Amino acid sequence: MRMFVRRDFVSAYKQTILGPLWFFIQPLLTTLTFTVIFGNVAKISTDGLPHMVFYMSGITIWNYFSETLTATSNTFIQNANLFGKVYFPRLVMPITRVVSGLMKFGIQFLLFLLFIVYYMNTGAPVKPDLYGILLVTPLVLLIMAGIGLGIGMILSALTTKYRDLVFLITFGIQLLMYATPVIYPMSSMTSKYKWIIEANPLSWIVEAFRKVYLGTGLLDWNGILYSFGFMAVILLAGIIIFNKVERTFIDNV
Image 1 (cartoon, rainbow, N blue to C red):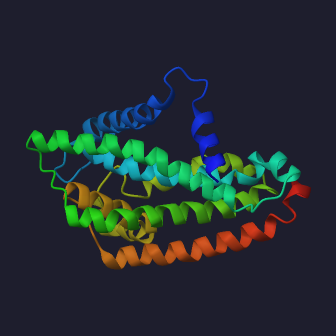
Image 2 (cartoon, rainbow, N blue to C red):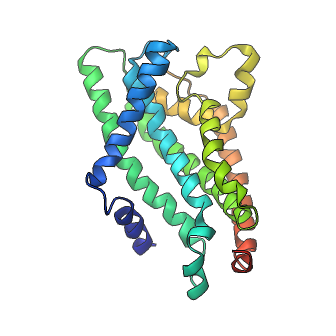
Image 3 (cartoon, rainbow, N blue to C red):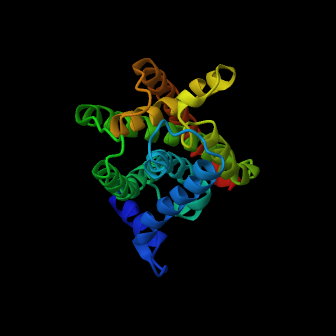
């Protein structure tokens, strides 16, 4: 696993000019885009928070989930040659994606912390909760990783037979982001559509993350418990399906 994590980290930007700087550039450009389009043009509420730090909070945690899911969903297709040559526990590969994604999250998280410090010094209503951070952050990462890993393993099993899913995954993740309070607070939703957002287990995680770091959001332990239960079910289903398919997938790939 250590070897695969190093491979993922090094090979991603090995032949690029800026290298690991892309870990900072990507979320920063996305945050700027969201600020211009959703903050200045569409004027979507951010619960009184500065646009940049509000969008950065959602992007930071969402990127970890989306990249974990995307990378895991390609496990069988991308590693077919390796799987066909040597045996090792196949679950190592999707778990490796979770760990390597955590390293990337750590780098982007440092950028997010710099945003928090800057806006606190400008007098913006950014109020981190230290005890909440210590309690919620590990739980948020666990649930995000578990859901991304579980769904990713299910999709990786399905893509061995149905290659169309490869093209739908990225599009589906983008749609899911709009059903998650990444670019808007849950408090801004009307009762007509709020139930859809509340049914999304990722919504409670993003809101909790924003609440403990920025002081604005919704920290609902019932919602987090619901998200944890969803994670446990989807992760168990993913492991079962993954282990079943890995015995015969080489014939399909």
